[in-house]
Length: 310
Image (tube, rainbow, N blue to C red; front, side, top):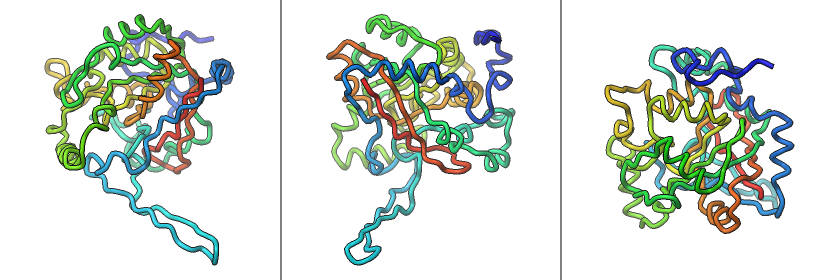
């Protein structure tokens, strides 16, 4: 078996030569690891990790609200349809076609045209995402303001893991709770509208998140993370510049270094609050994680349809 290189051994932090162009780091989720994940279900407790499709409301980043219509298909038969549906407006996976390196292109070196012609998230939907999930409840470890660009560092992730007694395995789906959704749920309608408006500029929005630069990328790769999911709007903080290393630019963002160069899917707006309460009560932070992305040919992102089973 070929040894997987450490992050420091990757050329310029790029793992394209090591990974399948459609699955990326999800290829770590082998049948053996799926069987191990299934063995973690001991109490039969299930926690859905998706928000309703109309949350946040109003939507962020200039996306528009979906329209849901229920209609009579026949007498005594109802049907429904969605219009104006943005697959990345609520809880979501960012696919590999979502974000590119400024000069190298999208994951695997693909151009935008090649991304449009690829399977996209359909490749994930056809396989499914099943593995050991690990929750790092950083918001329970330290106080994190919901409206400030608090930067979660690799050291803080390690401190949280140590406090929870968590050890990482290759192929883990790492769920990080920074407490942003807990804070969002306290806001009234006008405050949510102001937040949505602020998100349109990408610079006025202020949220906590995982830091940019090579440090988090190295942490994710060397810990064998198959996918990374966070309970905030963009995984990294907003404004993104707050966490960039000195002199860093767009190619130092977490989206470029982790999604585009390492093929690690990024999950945003994951609802981890109820799961966190359960994990804290039981002092068990590992679980069977499942996700069934939508089968969108060429899809750039998808709701995860994710579950944590304990």
